[in-house]
Amino acid sequence: MNMPHCPRAAQTSARLLAAAALALAATPALALYKVVGPDGSITYTDRPPVATTNKVTPLSRNGTATAAPASGLPFDLRQVATRYPVTLYTAADCPPCDSGRQLLQQRGVPFTEKRVASDDDTAALERAVGGRTVPSLTIGRQVLRGLSQAEWAAFLDVAGYPKESRLPASYQAPAATPLVERTTAQRSPRAAEPAAAPPPAAEPEAEAGAAPQPDIKF
Image 1 (spheres, rainbow, N blue to C red):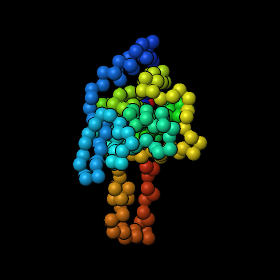
Image 2 (image 1 turned 90 degrees about the vertical axis):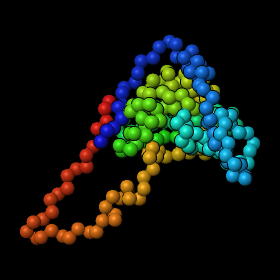
Image 3 (image 1 turned 180 degrees about the vertical axis):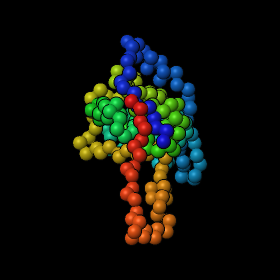
Image 4 (image 1 turned 90 degrees about the horizontal axis):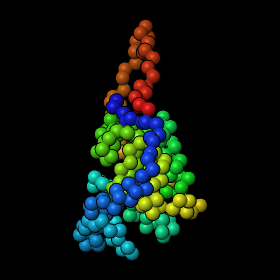
């Protein structure tokens, strides 16, 4: 299985804040939201809709739908999360991924976590962030590959996320989900197959080997 590369924390330079400001300011005006009106009409816009009864779906940098910020957030945090939604890309047994998740949780950043667990997920990760490195983070259309706490903090600052958590006590972060949605057949590949006949008494079935472990590089 081709799994993503999971490096240790990267070194950062003293120009992170300036680079973050320039990167966010220079981001091209691409559609960030898909708005469906009551009559079914569809509009794409780079401005977060305010006080609308239309169905609004945030879009990632490659045009795919992302999870909308959770309701019940403070107004200022909801505005930031709507304009610059945060998505964390992780894999199992990845200590830098755990550190990146902890950074976002301690700062109170509402985020969506996407877990890489298959070749399809790896391919989707490469399309989403332009590489196979985990953890990766997207803040709006800005992509950050590899964990650099100073760099992540700088971009979150420029996006307008508060430095300390303002999440309500009742807030519950959504569970991590795979990048590519699994079908029932994919989750249970043998569910549709007929049951195998029991082996002869003199030739007992060989013990199944251990499941292969994902080849994740650190």
